[in-house]
Image (cartoon, rainbow, N blue to C red; front, top):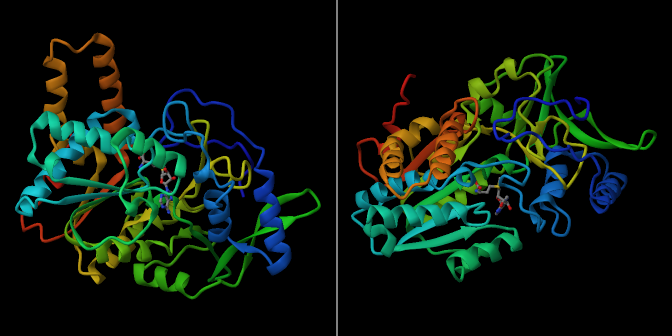
Length: 398
Ligand SMILES: C[S@@+](CC[C@H](N)C(=O)[O-])C[C@H]1O[C@@H](n2cnc3c(N)ncnc32)[C@H](O)[C@@H]1O
């Protein structure tokens, strides 16, 4: 494990970094120690579940605002409303391809405080899209504080926002920076075979550490085999077994329409290339990215890149078409980003401050070393043959 505080380039890092917290939530450490004492070292996925999702103290349950300039990281929707305005154009195209259903559900996983939905709705209104009158927004957000914020912003929430089942719908499913937070197992190739890395407690210095042992489930080796991946000696990698169950739920509910996944991610050959010898697990706190999950337990975000090969294979198995994937930068250009910028630039009421804020946000959204390097994956059902506009974009100069 890398030493605490070793910093790496963070895709989501923005302003000058704040102080890196190191103190963990005491109740979470107690729970982790108790589970280890009762039944032995935990899988990393179990550790991540406690650190992020514990009902009382997990990172994602807290009232503290996480994404945003004052939070731990800045996501694309929080960067500028133009991101949502561009997505609105892709949704409008999907709605038209479905013959403009008079009820178009927009289900958003990990909706946060509703920033993306608010900017999508604003974009649809500005464009005069008829979709705005048929759109039913269903945020799926486990944080009760965020759900209240969405409600305050957009009105009462449908029952699905707390996880209840919805009947099949025509519409779109959106997941921006959601899949990267699903718990992952950590594996390691050692002495020519696959091991799993478990989380253990070392009483002497009093800290968490990882230990190699037999994999907890054959599904880990099976996933790598299905991906056609053999790890190099010494290579560590993350595997998210929650991917398929999530897509199962999506495919069961989406009768016709589009799935848009936006996240850090690569196809398996790149994701599991030995160039990523230590894996892609990252922790985020105070606008800093680092590689130590065992500090600030419950007070920092934990993420791992999404396996796009596994995502698309699962989609095909569930009868969804894998329509393609592009960089976020290309996707935004395909959705008409340049035209949206021009509308703001040529509007006489745009202030200098607004114009400068937009320009610096565009730089972040398009920069391949920042948010522009995210992947946008489009899956769908019943959307017709020709490529959707988001897949047809080209970034100037690339
Ligand atoms: C990194 S934030 C992204 C928020 C928003 N999509 C954005 O881009 O600004 C992840 C969000 O997903 C929520 N979340 C994480 N896991 C979840 C789950 N299993 N079900 C529902 N929401 C979840 C968190 O509470 C958090 O609001």
